[in-house]
Structures are given as C-alpha cells and as structure tokens.
Length: 279
Image 1 (spheres, one colour):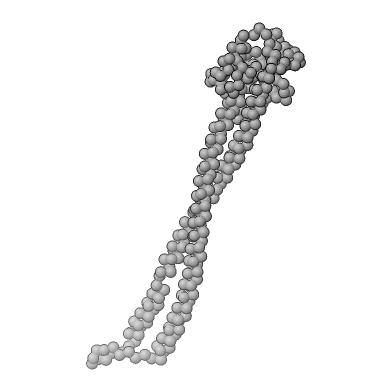
Image 2 (tube, helix red, strand yellow; image 1 turned 120 degrees about the horizontal axis):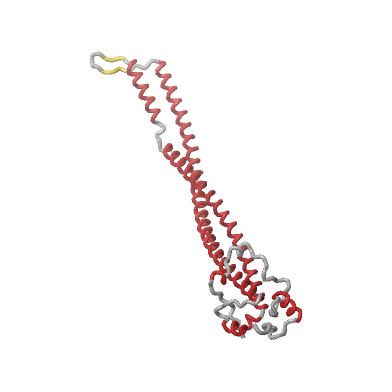
C-alpha cells in the first residue's frame, strides 16, 4: 500500500500514538491502525471450543462478512465489536452446553433407576399373580380327604348282616367322641382359613394399589425419558451452532490479524473494501 489508512468508520482521524505503534509493529514503513480498546487483544486465548476450530483462510472456505461496506474493512472498531459479540455468544453457548451435559448425565442415571423400577414392578406383579392363584385354591379339599379316610376306617370296624349282606354301622363311644373332635377341629380350621383368606384379600388390595401407583410412576418416567431425549436433541443442535460460531470467531480473528500485519484477507462481500485498500 502506498499510504497508511488514518480514518475509522466514523470518518475521524486516528490518534498520533496509534500511527507510531503501527510503525513499530510493522517495521516496514506501513502505518496500519491499531485497536482503540487496549483491553481487547486480537491474539487473546480461545475457549476450549475454539481451540479445535480451523480458520477459514487455512481451509480455503470463504468468510461471510457483516456487509457494512468499505467502512467495515477500514475500521477496527467494527471487528472489535464483532469479536466481543462472538465471545459473548461463545460464553453463552458454552454455559448452555455444560447445562445440557449435566442433564444428559442425569438422564442416564434416571434411565438406570427406571430400569430397576421396571424389574421391581415385574417381580411384584409375579407375586401378585401367585397370590391370586393361591386364593382360588379350594381350602376344603384336604378336609374332604380327611373325612374320606375316616369313613374308610369306620367301614373296617363295622359289622355286616350276613343274611341281607348289608353293612351295619355300629358306632362305639370312642368313635362318637372322635367325630365331635373332628367337627370342632374342622370349625377351627375353617375359621383359620377364613382369617387367612381375609389377610390375603387385604394383601391383594394393597398390591393392586401398589400396582396402579407403579404404573403411574412408570408413565411419568416414560414422559421424563421423552423429555430427556428432546433435551439431547437440543444439546446436539446447540453444539452444532457453537461449532459454527467458533469457526466464525476464528475467521474474524484471522482477518483482523491479517489487517494489522499488513495483509488483506479475501472476503466475498468486501470486494469494494479490497479495491479501496489496494488503491
């Protein structure tokens, strides 16, 4: 370039100290403008997401500018504002990604807990079905077998009428006492079985309530899983936007570095700016 650029975007002259600083940096007699804000550095360290990004001029990809015209190339303040905005967006996206990663970890833990609850629900349902099957059992079957055995014993001890060949049942006193004892024992067992059946009915009612509660919890867990899957999709979208933002940040930083060291970055939408700099 034949002469230094000494005007910013607003048309005001640059301070004399900036011209001296540019002369010292270039060492070739070219007076390029420096940044007005001393707190912003074009070589500031990048975030963890920007370290792995590839500059646009290194891969040959074109960079889309802001479209502000020739003044956008001649002024550092526009690039400084753009870098500050990109850094702000990077910080926000980094924080959003950290939150989403925490939600993803929480979703994995909840999924494991959900699987354990499903196994517990299946075990309880199996126990419930077993109790239902037992409640349908005829509790008086063994009592009938008892009476059958007693009848066989009475037949053995009975006498017969030899003329008519008919069985004559004669019950001694001890057999009568035994029958009374059996009747009392049967009533006792009937009461015991009734109490046992009542307890089982209460347990079945509780298991039904627990089954309904677990099914409701299962439905909530499934809704939570769907929400977490949506969060994971949002996380992927945010991460993709962050990578694109990181790439734009590196391209803008590379262009500013090239401008400050005397180079002219090739940008498709700043053709007029490039011609102005070459003139």
